Length: 426
Image 1 (spheres, one colour):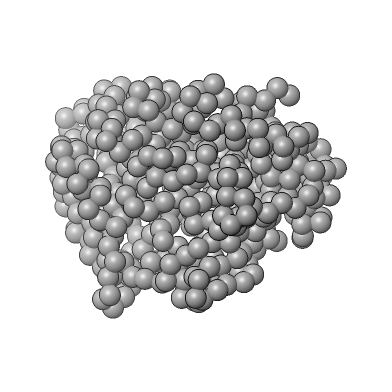
Image 2: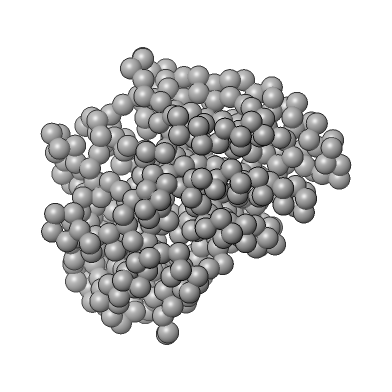
C-alpha cells in the first residue's frame, strides 16, 4: 500500500511507490541501491520546495537519532542526523553544550536543516552547517562515506548544504559552545528608522532580527545578547494571536490602506516591550501553528535596507491581501560551496503567504527584486531558479556538481526538481 506524502504547508505532495525507514546504514544502503528511483530523504517536511517529492522512494531516517558520543573538553557531539533539532538541543544542554545559534523552528530533522542551509540570525553567527566537524553519508552506490575538516575538508565543504542530492546524511559531528543564557529584548520603532539604521541595528547585538507587518509602518525588533543573570520563565508566545489579528485587520480594512495602516500602527505600537533572560534553547525557537508558504532570499548585508524597502513598496502597492509579516535576519559568511552565505555577510529577507492560497503571483513579483540585489535563495524556501541562474551566483557550483556526480553516478537521488537545480539530464 502506498502512502501519500505532503510537506508541512500542504503545497507539495506525492505518492511514492515505496517508503522505507531503515534501522542502520547497511539496510539504508540496500534500499538506496534497490528501491525505485528517485530516492529522496524525508525530514519533517518543513521545506517549502519539492525537495522530498518523489514518485519513486521516500526514506525516513527517524531511526538515525540520539547522541552517540560527546567530548566535554572539545565541546563536540556526534549524533544521528535524523534527530530533531529541539531534541538535540535538550540533549546537548543536559551535558553543558549548546548550538552557537538556532533558527526559529526546532522541529526539523538536523540532517534536513544541514541540507538546506537553515540558519538563525546574528552578524557573527553562521548557519548550522558551519558547526560541522565531520559527516557520514550513504552514497548512491549504497556505500558509507565520511568527510571531515581534518581529512578531506574540501569535500566536506562541497557536500553540505547538499539538498539531499549528495547522499543520505546519517551521522554528524558538531563543534559546539558551552551552554549560555541570553537576554532577549523586543521593542517597536518606525520602519523608516529601522531601515535608516539597518546596519547598526543588525550588527550591534549577538543576535538581531525584525519583523514588518504589511501597511503598519512599524518594525518589531528583537535583540538577544549573552547574560549571566538568573533565568526566568519565557513569556507566553503570542504569535498565533498576532497572526489572527493581522488577518482580521486585513479582512476588515483591506479595502482602505489608510485605515488599515492607522489600525495596525495603533495596535502594534501598543505591543509591550519584552525583556527576559533564559537558557539559549528556550529563547531561539517559537511555535508556528499557522501554516504558510515562504520565499527567502539572502542578499549582501549592504543591500539589505534597499531590498527590504523595495519589497515593502511593491507589497503595499500590489498585494493588499498579504498580511503575513516580512522577517529580516543576518548571517555570517562561510566557506561551504553551495551555501547562500558563501564568502559574504548576508541579510536574509523572508516573505510569507497563507497556506491554502496561491502564493506564486506574490512570490514571482518579489523574486526580481531579490535577484536585482544579488540574492541567493534559501534552499528550503520557494524560488524559481534553475542551474544556469545558480551557476552564476555560486562560484564553485560546477565543482560541487562534479563531486555530486562522483558520489551518485547513477543519479539515484535525482528527482525532476533536483535535475532542474543541478542541470542534470534524466
